[in-house]
Length: 178
Image 1: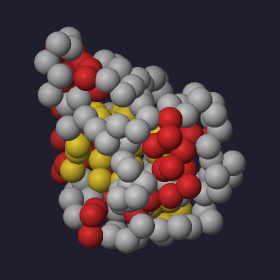
Image 2: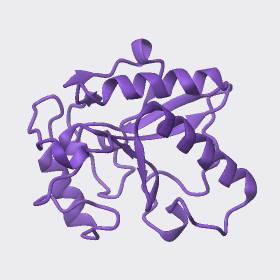
Image 3: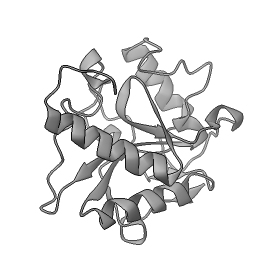
């Protein structure tokens, strides 16, 4: 695992699950560090550089997620379309997934049509009933993340992971405590 440092990676880290403003409605991460598998960290570094080259900055909502945290989210929302069944292992728990958005030059989040963790159809990449500016922002983020080596998932505009994430083992690390 690699600790993701804001200054070194050129990102803003706002770990939502260390606050009550999340799908579980409680603080899930008691002590939190943003960490990724050593294979995913260079992709995030590339994505951050690509975002900067376009005048934006990446904001990171979540990185590595302990299996115990995944179980909390599954209990709150047992819907495999949005939350991985902890018995199958989340790609976040493998350290190969990251949840991100883009910030403009003033530090404001780009309008992505829904907030982070909005578990609804409007969060899907192919949701057509959104303004063109939102579609443009989502496609910009998608392009940056794909070019950096990640892949998206259909149901969450913010979630990106290594293409072969399922081949990585679930990691139970003390970097983030629940």
